[in-house]
Image (cartoon, rainbow, N blue to C red):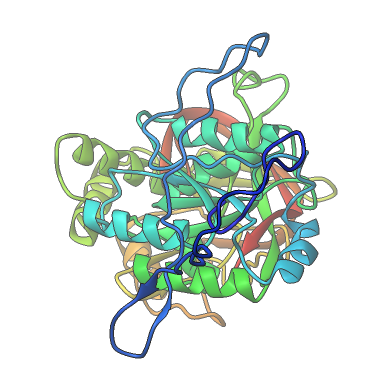
Length: 418
């Protein structure tokens, strides 16, 4: 170490010849305005460790990594971010926090330059590993790996609602456990970012990163409810894997709109609100069951609700955004309760005009209403059956056709940084 003096092994030798006493080592100083100061040692970029002999083979690479920092010696299995705050408080810095940043490079509202700035901002505050997704489902795989490793305190999702949904499904692959699992933070990078905005985060990625760092320093967390959709036993869909959703799901009309938007995006169209409204009109004109619904909602201890054309399931409110305008399909929905449902039994032209107006003028106190509207609040378990296969969507991702889906509202399922 610079400035340390050690003697030779074996004890002192003969006295050296008289000479001038050695100069003490000079401390390098920074020149510039504001006086002089000690120059800190240069920061180096850590690299992935090479497995030693006898180590198990490494799993397939998760994609390009911006930086990888070792957890360091003596750090065992992390009990979860909920039990780590005392350690951060003692140290007085986030430097000991180990975080995985999952980056969707195709996020619609963040450029490569913006992503680089955000990565460097986060890496300057914590031990960060940044991985860019390379295929659909990659974010889910990364979230699962973080949950199973026991070495990650925090997973940050940089992308839209689809990226967040995949990360959540990876984290909760073996079930919810907010005290043990890594916490989740979101940096919005999509076109709508409903989950992030429903949490009260800024819709701008740079501002949201600053808010995230402030929340970490101030130890602000929140445990939120989630929805779980699974195949119904005894139906053709019983083998469909269960899937978590963060803010909404839908069976029928709205899911058909989501599928049309995805088709347009695959053809190179940008996901804009104008594109969405065009697909709403096309879905309405081509909807074969808009006058006589095929969906039945069943729940324990209550009469079934029949002949629904669409069912919108909300885990929070608002349901979505049109630009900066929030749209409230189920105003009472909340991250502190189970699931809310809005069902419509008719989509005639007058009914669509009425419900569209009600949605556009909705508020936290008032949502769609009327003779053909069904609203249900705080449901823990219910099932939707359809006489014909209908499109299903969760968190804005189209998941194909289903005839039966069972929904469960799970309270206190996930710890998020707010």
